[in-house]
Length: 138
Image 1: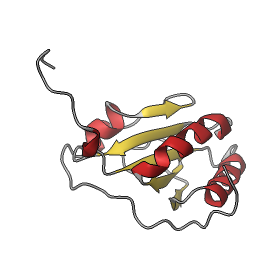
Image 2: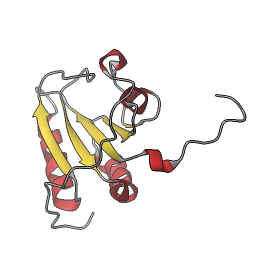
Image 3: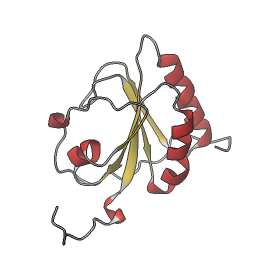
Image 4: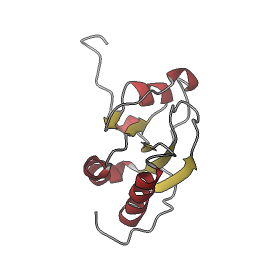
């Protein structure tokens, strides 16, 4: 990047994903507990369970989609409550490869992500309507 390039604006981010990774044989129970806690506390969209590798992900996982307004409370909570699980949090811009490989943050140990399975350009992915109904405070 050139020293005179303008910084990228925060408005590039349409939403976020958190990918919660687990081992179906040893940490699925912990992943289930975390998922329940998330659904009880945050207005997010809990994605399907993937007990096998899917897309660029090299381990079983489920996705949590969330709006930019949820980031400031949800991500620090994940930092404190992820247990033994690794979590990839990435922005959704028009470049999924960059979102997953260059601009994410990892909670817990970083895992392999297959960037060659991700496009460099896509439509902005806004957060879907939440499918959770929080009943507790984070």
